[in-house]
Length: 125
Image (cartoon, rainbow, N blue to C red; front, top):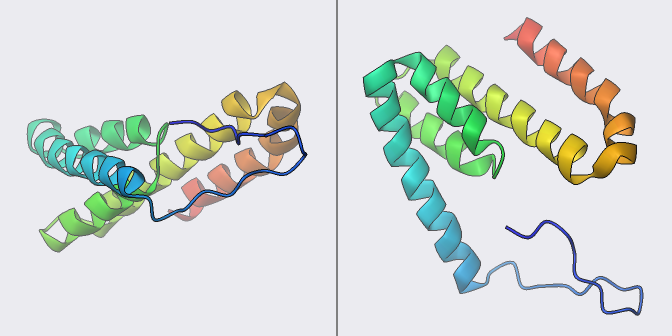
C-alpha cells in the first residue's frame, strides 16, 4: 500500500475518495485472509498463533485483526487473548509507521511516547 501522499508541485496534497471501490475490495480481501488465517492459526497453535498473526498484520493495518478478534471472541475466544492480539497489532503498526516509514527524525520524536504507551498498555493489560 502506498503510504506517501502524492504531491503535484503546488504544495497541496490531492484528496482522494475514501469510498473508492478498489480500496474497499482490497480491504475486504485482506480482511478475509486475516479472518481465515486467524482461525487456522488459533486452531493449530493456540493463542500464540493469534499473537503471531496480530504482529504480522500490524505492519499493514489494524482494522482487519481487530474485526477478526472481535468475531473470534463471539465464537469463544477469551477476551484477554483478543485484547492482547489487538494490542500487539497496534504496537507493531505504530512502531512500523513511526519508526520505519516516518524516517529517523520522526522515529526519534515518537519513540519515547510510543514506548511509554506500549509499556502502559502492557502493564494495564
